[in-house]
Image (cartoon, rainbow, N blue to C red; front, side, top):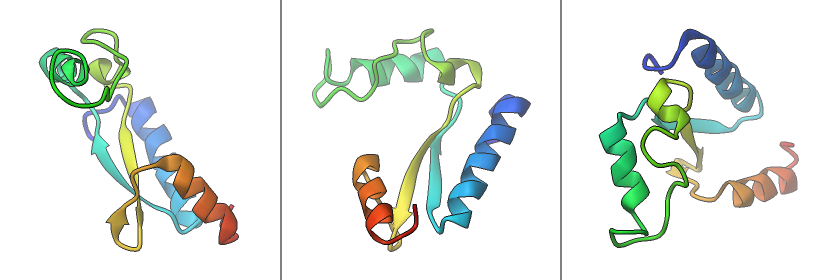
Length: 96
């Protein structure tokens, strides 16, 4: 989180705090990415094996400018990979 611009860091901290109030733990998995790292992610599913993981090439991602962060929800101590499944889980358990 220290890699984020101060305003973005404040927004991220508020987001995480709101989720904590709802008993949703979030793990920050990425903040700033240099152009090389962003280009490597962009290549996945295009020129490298795998499924596409980003639509932003180097220079076109907010991560390149300290303005974005990625999170994964933690449910029962494990990363919950699909946010839409998490939302259903939270709704069904009365947390939304």
